[in-house]
Image (cartoon, rainbow, N blue to C red; front, side):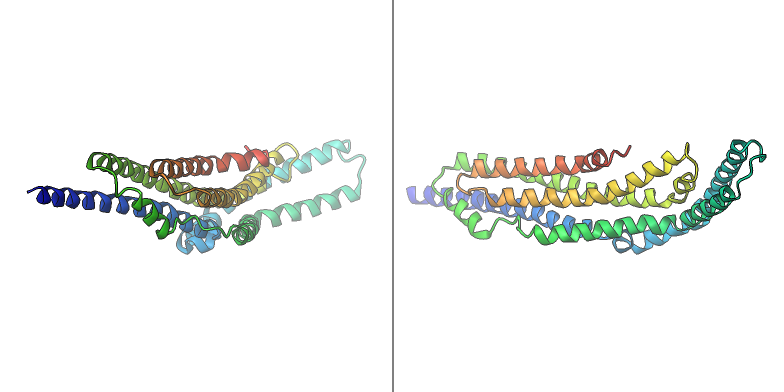
Amino acid sequence: MFGIFDKIEEFFKELLLGGIQANLESMFLDINDKVGAVATDVGKTPMGWNGDVFAFIKSINDSVIIPIAGLIITAVLCIELINMVMQKNNMHDTDTFEFFKYIIKMWIAVWLVSHAFEFSMAVFDVAQHMVNKAAGVINTSATVSGDQIVAMMDTLKEKGLGELVMILFETSLIKVAIEVISIVIMLVVYGRMFEIYVYSSVSAIPFATMGNKEWGQIGTNYIKGLFALGLQGLFLMVCLGIYAVLVKTIQITDIHTSTMTILGYAVLLGLMMLKSGTLAKSVLNAH
């Protein structure tokens, strides 16, 4: 009779232990797979991330933004010509070299506007080079091995049913929390790419303002924003590298301490990735 109860208790313990192990494996696989996917996506250029979206943005730039930028640069160049004439005493003090400089300045301004989209894409080519270099340095995997999980499970076999139920509930909550964090990480990376596409689609307009001293701040700040988006990719890789190193330093002994520590590192990773854009803009003084 007592042997039957022992077998029933052993059966439920096996069920609980199986659920806990499944939670642990899924918990680590979710965040680690997402970290690996993020590292791959961050290193892609706008053209490589989604060719169809890139073609759409390019067509918007060519058919909608360029004509508007042409009107803006015409107004800017007219203002520059009027200011130059007025500064020379209404052309009484004529200086041929000033007109020569104006023509060169006009040619450079028009060339910049017509190639603004290519310039913005070149910024992200440089950013991709930085990210790929960083990926070569960040070679530490964040994956917790199966042996570590098995060692953690061995420490639970002597625990009672009540405590195993609490551990199963705890690991289930942590698993859900890490899944939410992995979604946040994915949204940060995808949101950055969306921002790059939207930002690049209007590149000709701020470039059209750079020929004027007063309006030139618009173009200058736009370029800072471009480089900030590129630098954000490097910051995302640095965050992933720090997370990978921290996970590798965890001593897998007590299940409560280990799982809560990994949850804390995952939360910290999500928060820092959310702040990466603000950090990049603050470094380059972009606003």
